[in-house]
Length: 332
Image 1 (tube, helix red, strand yellow):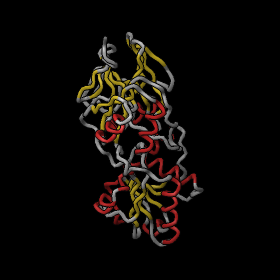
Image 2 (tube, one colour):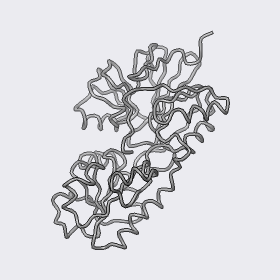
Image 3 (cartoon, one colour):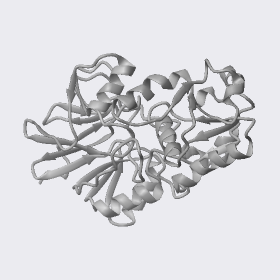
Image 4 (cartoon, helix red, strand yellow):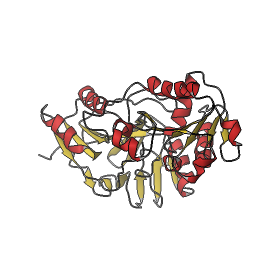
């Protein structure tokens, strides 16, 4: 009798499905790639064909140039030989998807990166019962329990109110986190202009093209210092301690990342205001998702694999680490 998932072949450079001759999130150019989302550790250029959501394809066009694209809407079902595939929301960033594969009476779900809490910039994670759940584990340790997002956003506004002659400079990953932080601020009623680093402009424009309202955004580079007093500035994490930040009025440095749970990381980046805002599932979301889906097996692509595999085994769920290469601990 064939083992469960025998038709899926995890390799260091990605997940290969021989029966369909396709790859999922390959780190090297392949003839046919299904891509879960637009972050660079999952989406690479140079493939023959790219199957992804329209949003992810647009992100890849911005980053790598025009793709040989096969747009896939959420819920759309398509066949590769005897393998049926569909994309469902992952709740990670704009356009992010889980990939559902059905073959020979078995269902495998490849989560890509995901989170379970609300995000105003993308549809929420959609749980799909399956035989094998292939999951990330970026924050796969019990120490990682993210606080409620509104409380973290309130820290920015409270700090700004207490320091009206300064600005708050928030470091946020250029794809997904920056736009989410902006939207979370808008949801509190903060309708003042937000100033952004030039590296964020194109992706913010792309989010707007897909209907995400970011409010008034102004370029920080061309704005006089005095006009940014009492304002919020968003920039990539690499700009926080760069010469670029010297143009700002006495910035209070913040950073939005799940890694801000670790104080040493905040100190290393000279972050005064750590904001624990993550686009990845924390420990409780990872384990809660597995309890909800109740798969027969769990395969872990990257992150803190050992702890999640151990958690599964103590609950009689067969689990393994795939040890894929090229998956990075992004600034989240």
